[in-house]
Image (cartoon, rainbow, N blue to C red; front, side, top):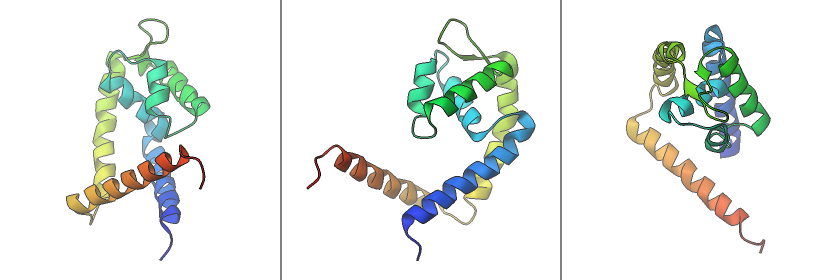
Length: 140
């Protein structure tokens, strides 16, 4: 059996590769789509919030580039400096993307029960918390 790190890396790569290909027709990447979802979930979103919420998903340069992409492509606008909001067109286009995202979720979880999915996420969350907590402690 391959170690968990092997499967984590392969899963992340597979998720990103598939999503990037699926989202290409919309001019999006997985990261840009994640930026749009942060803005959708918080109508008063700021650049700082996007960078903070998605820090585990990409570095600041990649996230900043994704923000610029969704601004340039008219998905979001700046109602005031440092703030982001979905445009009406962006909201409508994001609804179409959501249909594809739903199909992606169905494909990626085929043959996996809700309980199995919940357990997998719970185990990964605990492993992460264990290691993040240990990183804050001095080495023994």
